[in-house]
Length: 467
Image (cartoon, rainbow, N blue to C red):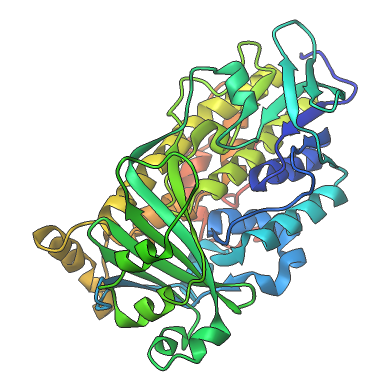
């Protein structure tokens, strides 16, 4: 039996998307949650972000989707294109994704997502403290973690979570030798162009007849676009390479941006030329690390602080949100006096570290696929995608946004079910399974329960908590 805490006090250093997701999940678990945000106001910079089905399920469960409402855009289809605009791959999103995975694939402005998370975190009682830049963390002694801010305020927590991103002071404190770095010269521009402006262009307007995601692939460059802000804004991410590699945000000469994409499809070239200003953003990778936690397991990392990754699978923020949801599930069992904080952190690390590393690798590989040079390599990629264009059945595809295995393992992943499984395995000392058949609950869910009615009392195979 664990030593029961009268109240579990959890601190989060960083109030970005991942930190707020964790705040919601952990507050829902029954802990007292304080978020220390260094900025003078809560907000999110940047442009669009994808809320793929693996985290759309969290937005629905937590009620965040109701707050964001129409600013969550569901797109109809994904078109994969060569540099000149020739379509070589295709994924139908509506209705296929909802039908197969049970949740939508949403697109949203980061500011709208962040505000929705703020509202729901406050609704669940999380204390969101601004102007609270952390200056010192005392975690090596027995007992609670003490956190000091630059303003001289001291906080005491049973667990401190580093949700403070790439430049994490929490990571620098417990893992001082770790430094995020660019693994190649790949970096990105981000931009938004209003749909009203595009509609006035006789060439470019053809791209916005429907709400679609478009990808133009080229040698060491690509452009991905999609609608955000209730379909009012056209979001662009423009991938390119630069030597030496970029390790911080840079101001740019807009002529350099336009020159990089001058030979692309004339339709997207017209939109690129509409971009008023942009910055060059690095793509920094952290780890894989040997640990995400302090020796006493009273400080732990999540999100970009632990496992920043390239952006090519749209899983950076999503993986951070999954971390938060998983921690919430584990800390619920601490609140219920079934495991200790250290045990919760250990279960979290053992399950989430390999998952995050998988996503880091898949994200890098998808970028490599999209950056292939014209010639035999790109031709082989395009040929392997061609069954999608003909409506033929296929078992795998280099279009990882539509490849069956990737979609199920990445976008169909249920982090809360994974956490429940890991917790049950720990508490029972073995893989949760049906006592009569011996079949694993995890495999039941994967191969059978996904198509059965969830509320049908006539079957013993309906998904159920094993805790």
